[in-house]
Length: 260
Image (cartoon, rainbow, N blue to C red):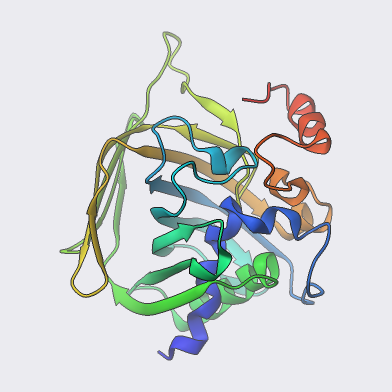
């Protein structure tokens, strides 16, 4: 596979950053792309403080740049006529930075994904974030192993000899997930913070860290092109000022939630 064919995969990370303003003031017009409707799970672990990621609430990382891994698993759905069921990808690197020129990452694609799925995902995310493409320093085809425990408490993600993640969700006395908060995200308007039990990355010549104990979140998503067309996402109404905008506050209230 050629690198150029996968460049826009990394665009899904921009849900955290400057892309928040682009829907209201795009630098380039959106593409004419087919309808898409996808459902799945996304897991993000990063350098931010546990249970308190400022990037999710219209701000920048407190510490400047942010080493992170952003995983997407599409359980089922379609992009045009392409069946997206089973598609998995992870982007790892400095995924959030006040200096957009420094945003970069390595894209890891599950080797069982088809060329048609890869192309469809590329086009779908180009539509979402085509105005501000970050720099992809490499693309690798790998085995991606993602598991959810039967009780939906524990989430594990592994790329052998490269990435190890484990997040554990807290539940209240009624069995409902705790720490569900409104958030700017590519896939929707809510995330669930989880305990970051393990977040270790080692790819020789690319990067290495152990950020276990830092921020981690999970979201089960159902995302459609219509949501973007109708500007229903919190990230489409942000300005990265560090506090929710008036439009975002209204959206959060309409969701029956309180701005965190």
